[in-house]
Length: 218
Image (cartoon, rainbow, N blue to C red):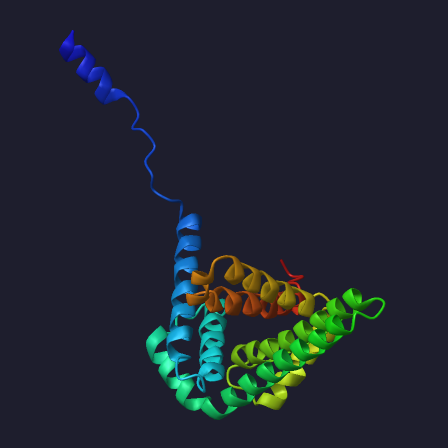
């Protein structure tokens, strides 16, 4: 009987294991790599003046993913930060100016307590978010364009925002989610730049897919 039971047990189908499906494994790998990009962004931003160039590097890495290219993280960050140091300073300066101006205007409005001050403050925050989102979108367009000029990148970002009205709201939503998550769990600041860069790049890639003509020969 014991032998028969052992044979029956050997004939039973194996229990399902904990192996992930191919799709789920790819999702986990992408999540891990975006966090690695965020960590490298933080590392390369430590000198402060390199933060803008580090963002350009993060944008270039995730843009490569959408083009089915796996760029080496460390070498890409090193090369792009060196190449885009001056342009990154300009990007960083614009973002800091937008943040400072938005904070100042909101502080004045809230302090004045004029009728409708809450609505005006919310509108100022939204306007600042749209301006910051446009800057991030321009960086993503330059990375997606394979080294186009900054003027062309700004023009491409404007084209995206005009042709797809949901573009800037999606970027601002990604910015807002990132800010909220970091505010709730400050430790997330160590890697959230990666998911944010991926989200902005995904918006650009989605617009390209929408604009691409369908294959009518199929």
